[in-house]
Structure formats: structure tokens, C-alpha cells
Image: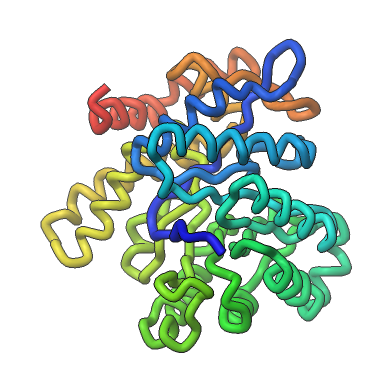
Length: 333
């Protein structure tokens, strides 16, 4: 069992970078970006949707985990946990990926619902629960539920199913809600964020609570007020300091009302940037990283790169310009 705690805060799904000529992994860019994100106070997530996990072989996923752990440890960042995507097409493959990730140095696995046979699974609530029960029971590391209907054939885990799974298995330590359903987040938090619940249903590591994390940052401030725990957001690749500042102010405002006005201002800038970047997908994120830091490149085929015209329009979009300016101000760069 890992000794690195999964804490409330901001998590960033790190892209997998590829060499332009061969599409082989570009490990130097990956390691440089990992350090950039962590040094901004944001926790990393590897081989997620933004990391193009569906485009990676099992061996490449392992390579990224080993490289990340080695890179962090070499910089003295030994307390930073690694959350790794281990979703597969079957329960068997998912467990193979969980074990491989654990062996490579992962601390937690985030598991998306298999969506290839969504038509059958979506109608069978017990089958959905059994998938997560079995993975949690057999995974050597704790898991998070990953609810992303757009990437799971439309399967959308409801709040009751999520809280039932959280209550039944202490090896399930959180959920990422990329459904964007603020009501669902509120309902889940109303159950799992209560102190009496944490005492009655402790995770396997006694000091951990069940984390409820949004999949976007456009409701990071409101989620703090319903006892949410932060977000896992691709926007943190572009603006990690800004989103970390927004999270910190949101938490601070719960006990210090003087922080609320600035939190609201930052939430507006971040929310506008979030919806704008989300529309351009992985290729848009990579194009912005190329502009900002000199690395990014293209996604793996068949996912197309962003066109030159669209990349230029994204870079010059007022919401992105405002976010980039905020990031430079907060980071001091």
C-alpha cells in the first residue's frame, strides 16, 4: 500500500508527447513538463484522456510511470503521488494495467468505465458495480472512479452508484466527474464529505478521505462550498499557477470572506479559458504548450493535429490571452 497520500487539490492530466517523425515517446519533453506542473503545486496524472492513454501500448504506459517516478525522486519530490490511468476494454486488461502501473511506481489508479459494449453495460447496474468492485478488490493500489460519459459510450455513473461503491470498498478512494454535473458532485459530497461518513467508512489508509474531484475548473469555487476536493483538469497544463491560486483562494474564502472577491475574479477567467480550450481538445492543448514552452507537438494518429489557422485563432482568443496573462502574473514569469 502506498505511503503517499492522495490529497485535496488540483491534479493535471499530463500529455504524452511524441516525436514528430516517428511518433515514439518524447521523454525529455514529458519529464520537463511533469516538473513544470509539479513545481507549480499541482499533482500529476499520467496516461489519462489528455495523455492519450488509448494511443499507448502497455509498455509505453509503464515507461511513462517509471520515468515520472525517477524524475520526481531525482529532484527530491519523493512525496508526490502518481495517479495513473489504467482503464482497459475488459476487467482483465484493467487489472493487468493496474498491476503493471503499481510495479512501475504508481500510487493510485484512475479507472474509466469500459464503453465498447456500452449498450449492454448501461442497462445493467449490477454489472457496472461488479466491474468496479472486482477491480478495487484485486488492484494492488487504490483506485479512483473515472466518470466520463463522452469516452465511455455514454455510460454515466449516477450519484447513488458512486456513493454505494465508495461505501462498499475502502480501496476506492475518489471519483473524477468529467460529466460536468455540478448537482451530482453536490449530492456525492453531501454523503462522503461528512466527518461521520469518513469515520464510518475509512479508506485503507486511515488518514485518507474519499475525494470528489471535478473534471473541469469552471466550477472549482462553487465546488469548495459543497465540500468538494478540487479538480483534475487539462487546463492545468497551460495555467497551473492560476488554477492552484484559484483553488487556494476558494478554500481560504470558506473561513476568510475577504478572499472571495479575488476567487470570483479568478474563477471567471479560468472558466472562460476552460470552455475555450476544451473545444480544441488534446491537439489544442499541445499547440498552446508549443507556443508557451517550445514543446507539445501533435497527437498520435488518427487524432489529427490542430490546423495552423485554428491554432492561431486559439492562441489569439481573448479568453486564452486573458488566461495566459494571468498565468504570467501569478507565476512571476
